[in-house]
Length: 172
Image 1 (cartoon, rainbow, N blue to C red):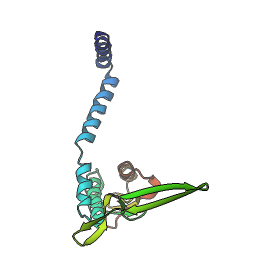
Image 2: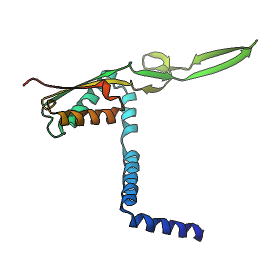
Image 3: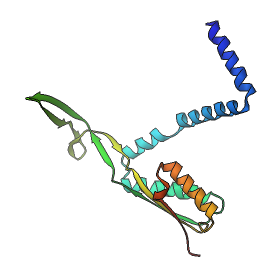
Image 4: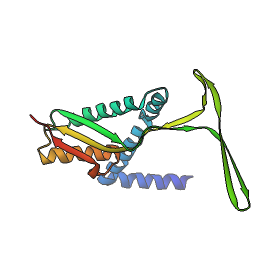
């Protein structure tokens, strides 16, 4: 046990002496804490409790608009997000597989429960639609640096290609 504590002590000393390593360790810890304390699970639960797809879309657009408006030089901003598909629901089922004469046969029986409006499938989860593109119209988009910062933020936030992000200048 003391061998491990010696190694840990030596490693800690090395990290404390090297400023870059110390910064990386601190950033990693902060990142893990942000993930740990993020409200992602709360957001998913709220969505499952009855938020409609259009409400989620509007919420994304409003949050993105507020975020972009805080970028230096942006000015007045409007945002629109497009999606590849709609919300998908995953339902619980009993899956039965059988093999006969080299053929695979799969039978899915969905689990039905009594709901407020009669019988319905047992919903396991809702899958958010994948974002296809983002359009940003703002008064500061004529400045190339502002435009690049907006594209960078949107691309990082939604993990979409920069070719699917359009930033244009608003008329005055």
